[in-house]
Length: 506
Image (cartoon, rainbow, N blue to C red):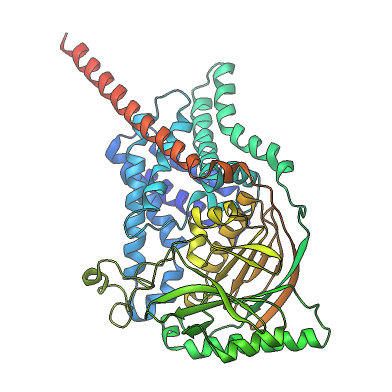
């Protein structure tokens, strides 16, 4: 038992190491090979226990940045609680693995069952928490092209199937079977990998409707975690100052005048739709600017918004964030939330956006998603379905210190680029800001905690990927198959148990 517990924990560490900022995508299937060998031959509760250890180890490491955010004032409890809840989801999924492990082509069904927990925890409770999905471990590598077929769900399925397939192959080789059995086991492990490699040439990167020059303004922020709550004026001043420096560099000819400028998430507060300082900053830039803002309307409601601001015209279209961060931008279950979150007593819930994030600016249909929305499938997909030729992702990662959170989010943006066949522009308050090409490669980026800006050309594309055409149905089909496999495995397993019991009574 101790060996299996150590193997489960070690597999969780390996899965963590497969995620950004490390370019070790190939470790992810090895992690699931280790998990598959660990739970082999175990019954329901044993498999659940090892799954809990696997999930807890991974999430404790993957979400350590929560300590940079809340740890000074709240200790390790929010980090431990969230990691524990996510590990319970993994444990429940692993509890089903023994029931499907005897089905034909078992690694596929095991992968489908394991990924049921991603579907569940991405939706419940409090609208879910999709961070750490397996597909996000693959911003580059052999599996990445599969995102263009079925998005993050299909990439995750390929990775987990490959890993469980390797575990099956190792088990098969131990038994010294006939060649056909070895070939079947090898095929299950290798086909997902080979399919990704075959699809690589089909990932389009060329400009289909010209290019646009886009500038990113990164104003920077103090690295103070939750104390950033009292630094709204600092964020504003830093953004305006860096925007002014960029305008001067443009006027001096150091950088070409862009077609569009992007500010980070909630860079400024806007009340009533007017702001003379922002007007002057955009006028100095001389080009339309997407202004990330806390936007307070006349009705008193606050949006986490991106406002399209044109020189000489002022604010225009506004996109309001559709996926608000629980316990920060809105607070579910307030009495319970007050145990964990400092936001409860002095904030009101923001308004939920209800419309797809698209705006027509600089002769371009631009898609918008804000920060946390990178983890959800639908915001970027809805924007592309509405005609977006480019995706812009403003974010404020300054809350989370100099840990791995910003790199994890950039990896999500890279997967989204391949999924939708669009360039993605990531504008962060304190880094990492980046320009991502439609094949997921990063061509320009900033460092963390520096005030800077960059200008780059990005391709505009109009072709829709199969992932966009299938939409959410890819995940629905995979979930349906996983549920069907679990039910089939349980029914057949109980029948075998009943038959075995009858034989022993004869």
